[in-house]
Image 1 (cartoon, one colour):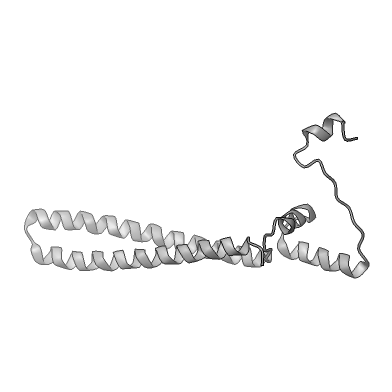
Image 2 (cartoon, rainbow, N blue to C red; image 1 turned 30 degrees about the vertical axis):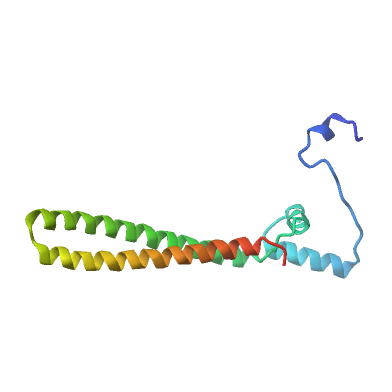
Length: 133
């Protein structure tokens, strides 16, 4: 079978089987179901040293990432609007308005920096989840 045509063309040609008692098998299947993966994916992740969390944990992280991405888009829009207002105010010579806009612009910049730190934290957390414990 080693030399058969289908074997050479498979991405994963090796088959691994082993025996478990009923409790071990139930424990394995509970973890597989919690992970949201199939058995093969689960075992491959384990052998590659990745930490496997539950599907709920992955969904919560995904939701948090989507929320942060949405906040970041809104802040980018606000910053663009402020830049346009600052240009108009500066062209008209209304310096007090420019100062007020600059203050708000600074707040937006601080918020974006905070969001970038949160993104970095999320990236690190996700990376650590896929490393060996």
